Image 1 (cartoon, each protein chain N blue to C red):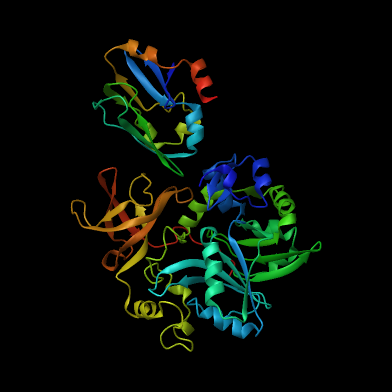
Image 2 (cartoon, helix red, strand yellow):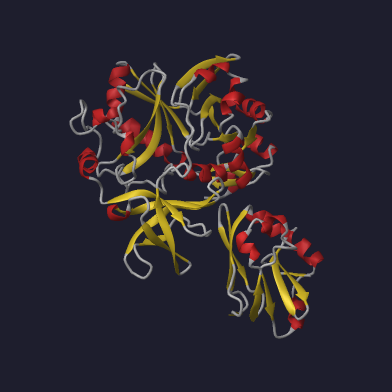
Length: 119
Length: 378
């Protein structure tokens, strides 16, 4: 598992990258009440805003960590946004994307590096 | 401005830290936005049992007059479109400071204590309000900021049971009653009121005992400390205005759907008609209606719609008709709720309009407020 400075986690599953947010991010957001997912098949560029998450208090965006194509979204999450707080590292993944070159993941933080990053 | 060192602290600052609050700057104070329970659970706990809020940042002001209560009431009536003279001793009433163009300078609570009028005003407005009162009230009125008292709000269906353990007399109070009572040698000023749509109390106590009072209340099974986050979602579900958002100098009381706060005696044909700033416009709007009105809005779908979201009459048209002034997720409604201003023609409950969210027009239905039935002890 890799981590971004935007508090996303990235996990390789077959030839796809699964993206979610970290426990730290979920805790900071507070109770999540709404998740807007992208359309499957969307081509995205790194740092595009692809997911909108709203907590009771505020809205935040999740950015595409890399260039690629969104091939699957976690549809049940739109019906049960509270999952983001309950299981951010498991059931509450947001989307799976196909990227050109898996080695691009090497640039991201390891879990230990991320833990240092959030202090 | 958000320099933590420059922020003022309420007498409950250390209490908040001890309770594990996340503190944020608010109206110049370091205030708890939520505690470990989180906004959602704090909100639901308040509706189910009782929540304790620190509202000490709000302004407490005492007005007294060398000429007695009647002269004092009439003097304040020069600034608010409220029947102050008819406010009985031990009773409280919601009021508004209006400006000469009929806009709202602030909203406030007015209690008749017998010795004077006790006002509670918004934190962000209090310095301006106090200066305004001092300037505009006649010389026989003394305006005194009560800076040595904390203000707590205990809200929810079990608030009476909890508070009655400390002050049994509160069980006999009705909604908007105001009571002054000595408890263990300290003077408590209690009103049966609040800003959540729930039964409950606002409790002014000397700053020196505030922490002890708060600790005794949260030690009770019914009571959880609740922060500003849930206070906002509770008042939104209750359809109550937040000054600086839903009401301000650009909104008249009639536009804001606060005409109910203007009693008959101050309206056209009443015994003390007008005589407050902006009376010309406000009395005319009470008679013939205002061109726009604050309404409740129920977004269809799950997406919360926040302050500033533009409103449109149709899905395609470029005719922007209004703006959401408060909005978010209502934990008790279990969906998004909002309020905002729309033209009179679109103000009837059931009217379908659209809000533009992230470039898309989403349907919104004009709805009666409050979004939940209030449970005040009348």
